[in-house]
Image (cartoon, rainbow, N blue to C red; front, top):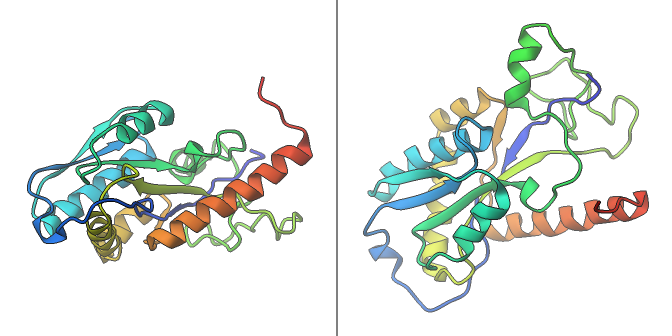
Length: 221
């Protein structure tokens, strides 16, 4: 296999949002819904582990609603009330559709069965899951990095207080050893970030990959 499994760096956070003041102490007063990709996918697993943890920390049920592909799911959340009760969990395929390696989760069974042979990982450092595999840089491609990122988003006008509360609770869940161990089991590394860090990550990746696409002359068919 020429493409290596990628680790999923989970930068779960909500997008920057500005709106009317809201009392975070009153949120939530009803169940929260996380819109995620198709059932059984790595994104679905991340959403369910996160939802389970948030149900305990928020004191309200957090449910996962599987809606498949990114455009439809993103459009649904974007048009939802900006009150913090409808969230989106999706990966960087949402903004980077071209460029893809096999993620760790679906690659694991066929690697263990000896049906494919991984050659390298696409992260900057070696994977704890595959400590014997070199990075792409070690294999001869300096500066190469291609990771799959999952994040949680809220509608753009969600009040700041609610966004801050959600970010705090999501990061708290991701820091729990049980959560980290469950995600590590499918090759996912939990790296709960601030909203500013995640927004900066998206901007940097769009800029970097946009340059690659332009220089390679890649055009939409």
